[in-house]
Length: 231
Image (cartoon, rainbow, N blue to C red):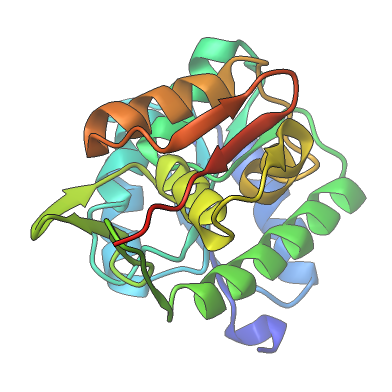
């Protein structure tokens, strides 16, 4: 896919930030759309179906967390990469953002070369997500539909936030393999993302609670594995 076919949506209530981001991304040939708040971003996302969405966390009318949550409910945007643009780095805001369906964070201020490099890396992740989303994973006790971001257990559909879903997909992709914490961080959050030490633990606990499964095993001092069960 050529750059001029890639759509990027920017949402920030600071005009100078929007101008900076837009100018540098347009120089790379991307099609750029702007929004001054969360409501405008939602309207544009529905109309344009962007490949990458960059949201400021603190915006009037609708903040970035709520906007991201709403975006993840829009048909056709399940594979779009959503990134928060923020100066905040607390574990709570990161976990809240990831639970809403975000893929990454970009910290302010950011230099032009770093911005374009990060965007290229995120778009590579989009392409990988697109390929993976075309597959359905069937296990003895679960069916995982990567295209619809839905888990089916006992005939019942269960929806998970994007990061919880991706973590479950990773663990179930190779039953009985122990994934180290570093492997999980790299595969689900990316090497450039800094998250709190408890992030994986929180996500695993929520998956266990929501799906009602006990075969995601904690391997003390190493990481986690999905323990296969015979039918």
